[in-house]
Structures are given as C-alpha cells and as structure tokens.
Image 1 (spheres, rainbow, N blue to C red):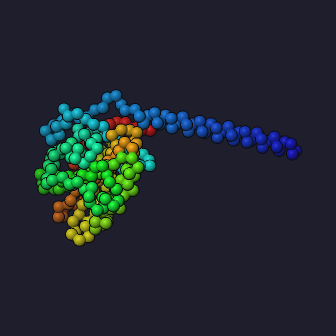
Image 2 (image 1 turned 60 degrees about the vertical axis):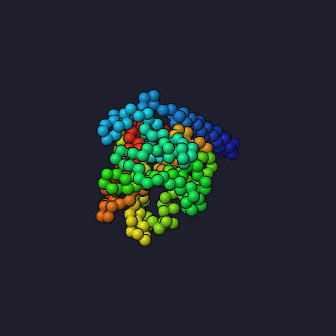
Length: 264
C-alpha cells in the first residue's frame, strides 16, 4: 500500500509538471505573436478627403501612437492616428517651428511660451527637452492652450508620474471631473483623459483633454515621448458639454484620421 501511494504521487507530480510546461509554452507563443504583431503596420493607410474646412488630402501624413497612460504598460485605449503635422522635433524651438499657426478654425494668438522655467515644470518634470505652450482662439472667441512637454530616457517617467490632476490643484484649480473620454473618428474610437476644473480664486472654468504620444509602435522611453494637453477655457454660462465638444473639435483637426490597427 505504501509503495502504491508513492507511485501515485510520482505520477501526479509528473502530470502537473507537464501541465505547467504546456502552459509556459502557450504563454511564450502568445506573447511572441503579440510582440510580432506590435511592430507591423498596415500597408495601406487611408486619410479622409479634404474639404474647405479641412484641407488635408494633399498634406503628407504622420502616424502616431496615442495612449492615456504608458510608461509601464500599454492600455486597451491606445489609438493609432494620422496627422498632417510633424511632431517629431527634439527641442522646444524646433517644435514651435513645426506646429501650425492655424488648426482648422483655430488661430494662434500671442507669443509661444517656453514653460521649462515654470517653477512647477522645473520642480516636478525636471529638465524636459520640450516644454511649449501655444494659445489659440476660434471665430467665436473661445480660447485654448496647447501644452506639449516631452522628454527621453528615464526622465520621461516624470511625465507619467506628475499628471494634470496632480499638478493643477497646486495652481489653485479644483478638479470637478476626472475621467477617460472618447470620440469617434472614421467609425473608430479615439481616447483621452478628461478633466474639468474651476479656479478657486477667479471662478474661471477649464476643460482639459490630455494624452501621451509616441512616433513608433515600440514606445521605448529612450526614444522619447510627448505629453500633450488641450486646456479650453469656458465662456461665462457655457456648459461643460459644449466646452468638451469644442476641445475635441480642436483635437480632431490635429489628428483627423485613425489607423485601423490593433496591437494585440
């Protein structure tokens, strides 16, 4: 009886080891397939035809990878977009030269700001290679600021650790709403993080969309990443819904088409 028990246990152990081995092989094959898929882009990328309001048909397009997070991981909300604008500069000055002064109905107003010397940026984001703020206004008088902060290597971690919902309260903005938001482009979803805030002293209200951008599917921090924010300031009496729609209208002009591509 004792010998039989020993034999049964030995067979069970071998059976469990075989199951574990098969599971490990399955995991390796699955992730191998995912990593291979992650580096492949479709041969044909399409962009909508231009019109009087959006003359992008004849403009060279750039492909970008957008996500709502991402230093440690890729989220299910990653979006691959096309844009007529080159955002691959390595310095604030170079990016300022590449950014359009007109984005749809939005026109640049005032001078660009190099915000690298801003005390909050300097304290919490280190010495970013790119730290640019540009202000725009549409025909109705609605104003917004496009803020782009970028870095490379391990310092890029700071872009993900010090997010707007963390830094805005230090500038007296009270966060009223904080969630992920989405719109449809080309019948596909585009995601961004969304904040709605009110200034404690002035009572001014602001709708913010923000995301992170890479120019290749590998998303390696050593190659660089941009943190992009659109801060739209509300008219007196304007609803949050109307402000959010207006902010998205600006983003749609920056990224007018989505690439039908899935990482996994």
